Length: 187
Image (cartoon, rainbow, N blue to C red; front, top):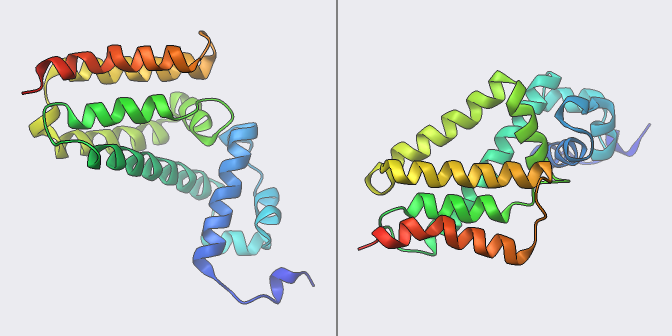
C-alpha cells in the first residue's frame, strides 16, 4: 500500500494540493490536458481520493478556474486597499493586477485560452467581473473606465500571445498610459 493510505487525513490540505498540481499541469499543458491520474499522483493521493474532492474532471477544472479567479480577486483587493477609494479605484487595481500577472507559463494563460472556447469558463469570468463592477459602481461606472479595462485586457492578450516583447520599461510605460485617464479625472 502507498503512503497515501496510511497518513492522517487533512482534507483542506489535500484539496489545496490537488488544485495546485492541476494548476501547474494546466500551465504546462493547458486545461484540456489535465490528467486526473497525474494530478492525484503529484498530490500523493489515490485517484479515488481525488474523486472524493472533485467527482469529475470538469469539477476539477472548474475549481482550478474558480481558484484562479479568487486569486485575481485577492490581488485586486490588495491594490485597492493600498489606494484611496476614489474615481476609478477598481479599474486602477484591475490594470495593476492585469499587468502584474505573468501571462505565459502559468495557469492564468491556460484559463485565458480555455475561456475563449469554453462557455462555462467564459461565464465564470463574466459573472466575477459583473459582480465586481456592480460592487464598485460608485467609483467605476464611467464608460471611459471600461475602455481602460478593455485596453488592459488587450495588453494581457498581447503578452500572452507574445506579439510584442515584454520588458519592464514597456510595462511601466503602458501602466502609465492606462492609468492616465484615471489620474486626470481624480478629484
